[in-house]
Amino acid sequence: MSQGPSAGDLAGAVSAAARSLFVSRGYAKTTIKSVATAAGVAPSIVSSMYRNKEQLFAAAMSLPFDPTRAIPLLVAPGLDGMGERIVRLALGVMSDDQVRKDAGAVVGAARGYLDAPIDNAALGSFRAISGFVQEEVIDRALTAAGVPDARMRGALVSAYLAGVLSTRYMVKLEPLASATDEEIVSLVGPVIQQLIDPTVPLPTARPGRS
Image (tube, rainbow, N blue to C red; front, top):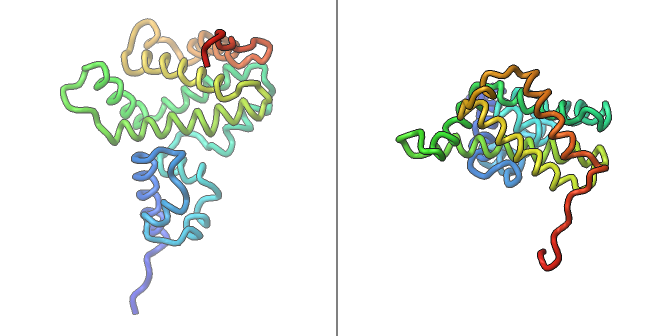
């Protein structure tokens, strides 16, 4: 009598299917049900392995932090100092070798540093992780903290951090590339803090512009 797949085989199939879908579709468009279908298992099997899509994403993409703890850690101490905490989280993400490799492939190809065509897998992986951090961590943290215009402020924070991190890790522009993490936190944290400061309103659109 043949035995069914082992727990390890199921976990591997689910993880591989999830990573493939997250890379090709992005975080928002990937569901537990679609991962289960791609892995050839029932959605209840995936749900028994992971409490939610965030945990599935973290496992499949080998994130260097636990998303279930990220938001409380950002929000619990209060709005004061959140800018520095966001920068530390971003630096933690970039501490992963694969994340830096994927980001480097994307930035390098975009700047003409690489002779080969852009690696679609690297692009998809980097986009998925960037989108997850912005939408599921930064946006939700700002919303939980009661920051007005949370989505716009979150997008501005993500855009600014993307510029700093790509310049530091991929372009390797000095002296930013050689700065310590604490120096980056000290330099970038106050800028992020100002972007999320609810006492500093975002400019409204000029008359005649939507």
